Image (cartoon, rainbow, N blue to C red; front, side, top):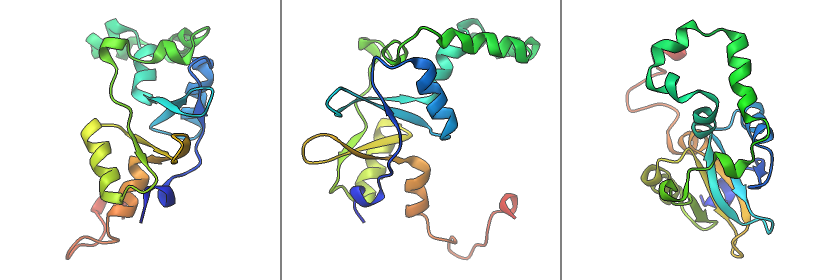
Length: 162
């Protein structure tokens, strides 16, 4: 099976799109992240959902998670409002912290896809066509679904799944 066959048509965003809209797409589709594409449809970055959370949750709470216990839903709403007026490009790591784009061409095998995702620790892989445009996206959970057999050797389902 090749990457082009596994790729799903999931939403993408542009660097100038509203950060709030990107966060809503991630949440609404329960995505581990979202691909950021330029005006020509070529991928430029993967914005992981965890990077969006880094913008939503104040640094002092990230540094001391015990402080989160004293916050309620109203505080959470206020934190999310911090995305208002921000662009997707604002949420991407700075140039000194950028990570390599998690992308493969459509001919990549399942194992090549898994290796690239593992190497880059990316929950989302961009599958590109021969012109370098986004063909589709592949999530880690979808890839694991294809890689793992129905049952492990001599095993049934895990107790927590019964």
